Image 1 (spheres, rainbow, N blue to C red):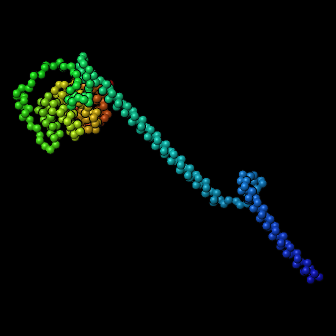
Image 2 (cartoon, rainbow, N blue to C red; image 1 turned 45 degrees about the vertical axis):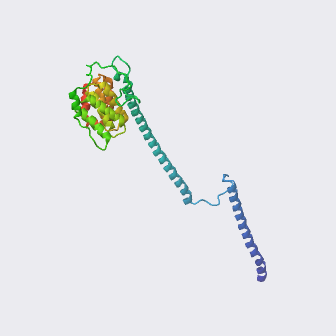
Image 3 (cartoon, one colour; image 1 turned 90 degrees about the horizontal axis):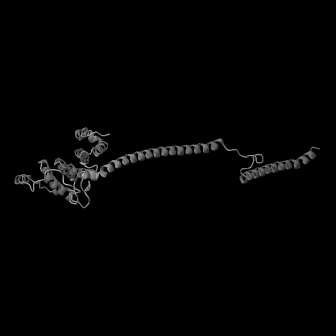
Length: 301
């Protein structure tokens, strides 16, 4: 009996083992099919396709963290760019308003050229010399004769001798020599001779380092000679040529003084306001006394 049972059991055990292997292979194939179906139909309902492998928490949390950090960085950079753009826009608007104000004032100064350069009745005259005029600004202008005592036909012998006594410098810089000679004539009170000499200098040496000094001093030679109408164009010309030059602030202040002498309060106030805004350091420093003295001579709104 034992031998018979042993003989029956021997075929059964391999059959059971073989059946277990087949079941494992079937389950594996079913799992692969489900995985393939999920890959082909990634949006399918979970009711039909059970997940075979769940994602690890570490890998799932890494992507959102990285994405969130990148988005946050982009938003921060956009905020910074918007803030910078707002600041730049504000600066542009401020500069535009300032430039508009300066342009309006300069237009007001230049707009009254006829009133400055001519008497109440008489031919029209330009404030600034035209390109074809000589350095003195009087070669092609038509100016009504001022109501003053006529000049003598020519200088006296004594005056000629006094002028000739003023030595002209002789250095390696011919332009500086011409300016220095004009300065000496002006300093000695020979204003007509200084006007002629300085006009020749600014015409012959327009780009010399002393050109701004020459134009300003030429205006002063006319102003000190009692001719503010002839002085004003040179002061304005020197200021407009280069507002950063050494004598541009002086010329703007002397332009206001010439307007005061011509009883043109409106343009005198414009020039004084322009000086105070453009050169605040000089208004409180080197030119303070002259600036305050001119402001006391007029009443500005």
